Length: 519
Image (tube, rainbow, N blue to C red; front, side):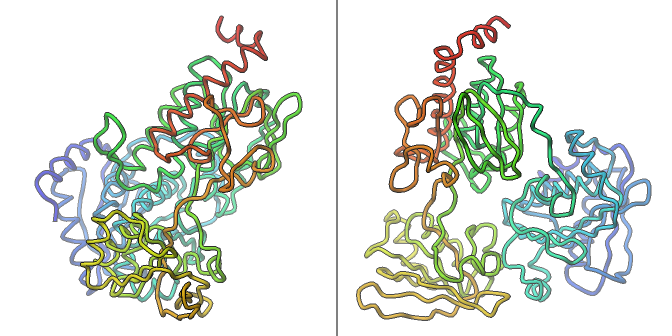
């Protein structure tokens, strides 16, 4: 199960286990139990700090539990943690084995306020690139708070229960059998789902020189450049890394031949935190300019700044049809890599015939029984090589000149969609188990589009200095009218925006900038 190279790497990590860890396989007669035992046996042989035992399964799912030296079993895996979850397993071994957790003191204090027992299950697919971050985050909660037990569940082994629980998108998190979240989620948001108040008093932050709104590549670049100029800088972001978090492979980031989105997002945040930058988790609701800018968050709290850089990025464009909102996470999905394995041998549709849509169709064709592509235009927009591959795949059917008009279901899950032939106006009902929406991006500019000039797509219009129609207000990245939406371009725009903000402060707040330079 583990090749020699993986074993060698794992053995070096296990040298960091400072306290004994018992691997306990809770067995039944399933094939999963056999696989878990075989996996655990290979792992246990790599370190004298690990022991392996078995227990009969009296409740719950067949699983591999990790027991610490105090007799607690904070973390378990109901599924062999390979694929993207292998890293989650290695980190779990280290944490249960006494390796320190790198977490902010204020976050740990919030975690410790949970005072009622919670058994948390995170349903995943092993090909999901977003799932490990959620699994690893909740594993930390289970280590820090003895009231919490966490189980990773590989949905591929529990299809009937997944169907009963309507798990059609991952990660899906349940606490004491109640669904609390679907999709990727940050720590503070998750704690709020568990009933923990995470409100931070922002009134003491004072007046910022530069306030960056958004934590993607553009926002991270802007924050670093501002901090390096000695400016009092803060970043507001609901999740650091932004859309990069949902990117699987990145092979066009100059000087780095290959990386993954989540790794790049972690690197961005780590680099920003090397400087004196205040990172505030949250979403912005409004912005006004009087003497200074006043930025209002969704919770009503406000921050003031002399300059603001908007870098809120973009998100997947939705179809905007009847039933779409109702069946998100119940059949309507946006990430074929994450959610595709949940539709094995089922019928799915991909809405969109660009590169992302045809790539999704090709990926899904290896999993699903049938894949139908629905493209609004008369021809596909994907590259010719992708079109040729899709055409040669027997279980892919492509319809052009069609418009999706609704999705429908029986309340708990999606059952199909209706599309209209744009030439004949004929409507067709297509019975489906899942719909993957791949129709491009929308700028996250709703909260500010009435304050600045935007184009017909809602993108913020900026000049060559990254300044908007409002003096002192700058914008960078995918939220702007830049011609190309690329990570490296967003970073360059973020740097441009910060340097322009610095220049603005020189001209409008010379004393403050002089003080910073002198310091």
